[in-house]
Image (cartoon, rainbow, N blue to C red; front, side, top):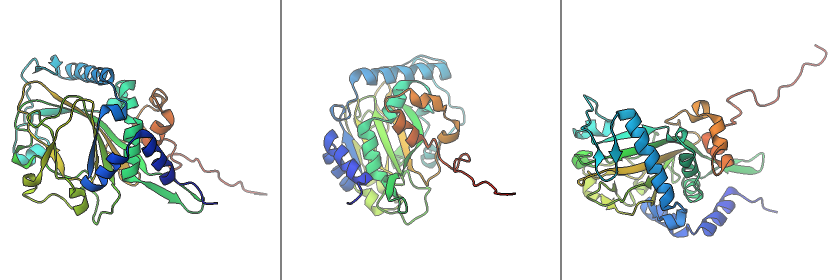
Length: 305
């Protein structure tokens, strides 16, 4: 009798959750836009996530923030420039909140959303244990971040196009070595600073060329949508031209062989994993319980020493 594989399990999950059209989009385009009625993320959940993020922004930065009007005060970055801003010469018009799964259970629930997890498992795949006759999922968390963006230059004319798995030596294969779940907590339109990408560019298995922005298109979708995309997709963002904020959660995943951005296995409070919608999945994705973190495997005992 043939053993049931993770691929078999995943196909059942894809069918149960109605994800087959989005899997096909990922194969062809390198990304899929999944509406909230498919992911199950409600308006109330989006509102709660935004509230926590804006409260944390006020705590860190020192002024009130609203989605409609943005920050109440002028923000001064000093001499700071992010990597993509340095490349383009643009003035920063966003900031990033990190380790957001420590903020509140709502963020941990989002990180193990069944639809998002299924698409991540599809993109990153499984790895085999041939001697054990089994396989296991290779996806692990890399980081959990929020981007809060306001009107400005964005990433300039280049749109900041890059690939998430750009630090991995080539050649790249079909499976993603990094993959991303971007949760749009505000409406995405071109003028609101939408996600930019070059559809199908994941098949080129390369970094973007110098004029890649000419091939880019905006991904427009309503708040609550999920943009799931392959780590080899050329992507960036358009500048925001409208008042207020664009708020995004980027739950970033990696193949277990790739170094994480955030050392979650060693530094994330493990007890928080039990306070979420799916503790087992959160613990696996976090990388808790690896036999190489402690002496888990048994050792023999000397006889008649």
